[in-house]
Image 1 (spheres, helix red, strand yellow):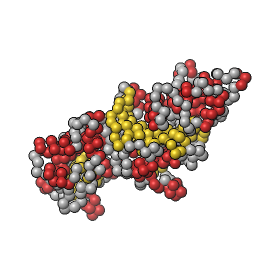
Image 2 (cartoon, rainbow, N blue to C red):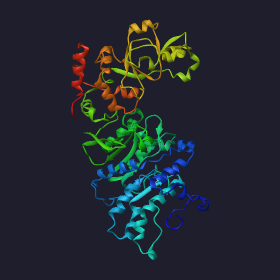
Image 3 (spheres, rainbow, N blue to C red):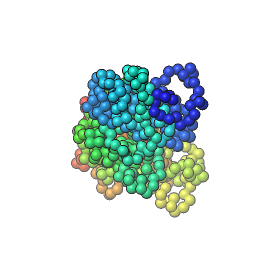
Image 4 (spheres, one colour):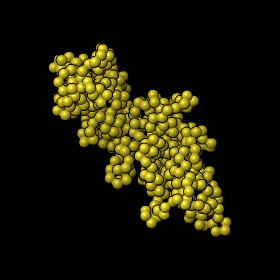
Length: 517
């Protein structure tokens, strides 16, 4: 540690405890994990620091090497520079380094080690993390160093450096692998101008890393990243989707399933995405779990800023394909989705159990029928305090209500109810909608489908499957709801007079529910 690697520790080596007896031998990934876990929760939250399990770093590299044209069981030397601009403890660089060293056993070990700085680069603004990364990467080089006569050995190269991963790249990379920090960040005017093409509203540091990494790729470059599934559908990532799909093509996407073992440490709403500068037409969709990688489908590489419709399961792959080709969305068919205006914990003093305007909560229609949930009894009514409250809080016209979040154990992701004129009359003419409910209202006197048909469509198994292709989490935002694909206006008109049974069959046929992909 003090002599075998060109990396200066950011603290006194004499203060280090002897950890091997306490911990036993650790892999490189486990060393990085131990470092992150040693940080306080406040530090991890403030700087967005997290570790990447070995299973995910290995899976991401498998995607990247396949996209680079380096697939197969035989290790292959790296075709160019591999960079991680937020390297932390180096976990994502380890698989690439290991493969390159295994593929270079027939090459002079001196040349192999001398060439590594041009092939592996890690950047991070945490000096301690960079030092850890340099040590675990150097440990992988020890067998190669052992092939050099002792008198000819030199310190192993430090492949990671302290720096700003968002800064302009000093050299172009053939591949970028990353799991960067996530969270809102304040930008200077210069930074906001630089990243204006990928920002909507507040800036998320994750999106900035994605854009900066793309800038640093060469003409044959590949980018592999752990991304939140909100990147695939969320409103705030719309410009980033537009930029990536116009500059690159999605080649591989692996949804991470939350199960036992190592994957219990990973949020369900995570996926591994690999983009390429090559103009590929199709993307491979897979799922990753403790059981390994499972193929889901091949789909056209998605384009544009709207939510990308991608299947999470093989049984809805055909639904995803059919929905992706449909000409209308709920928004373009004349319906506007908005989120209920009442954020209850901000207006707690205005909520009571006996007087005011009735409040409709998400739990009031969790079974698909409107009722009064007893658990909300103490906050059943809202007191209007101002004319502004009257304008912004009250809903006085029929609408379709959709739960914005559903419990994981619920069978459906689309849970809705038709708030009719009769319901409003029973409530006294107006209601207040709580923030966990989306409200659908027509934007014109004659939308492409009536409120009654819309309500019935949202109850169908086919539309529920489509919703799962848009959002993999238990949340469905107003923006995502507006993007629900619909068939042509003529088809919708022909459905208006169908019975419930006839409609269910027609919708299933149109969306290919139950068909093979």
